[in-house]
Length: 103
Image (cartoon, rainbow, N blue to C red; front, side, top):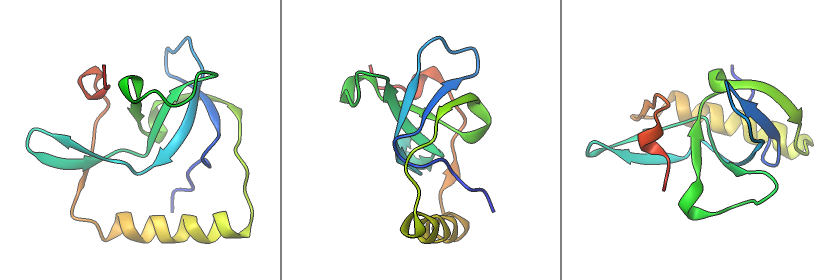
């Protein structure tokens, strides 16, 4: 089971120069007429959510964790629900590409 970082966590991506704040987990994205998912959707930190500059990425794209978001028992239960949803999903996991960034 993959334990994802909590919403609000701040990371650097591989070869990244700006901090990214995690805003969502397992977002669905339309790509080539099908829906795919990524582990995370984030935005530049400290700016926050800008729909024109969202960034989709996966666990393997994270270079370092600057800050871990809030976690409690509800978060732990939610992680289990997320994992089950992904395991039973019909969607493929996306591969990071600059094409999938909203510009």
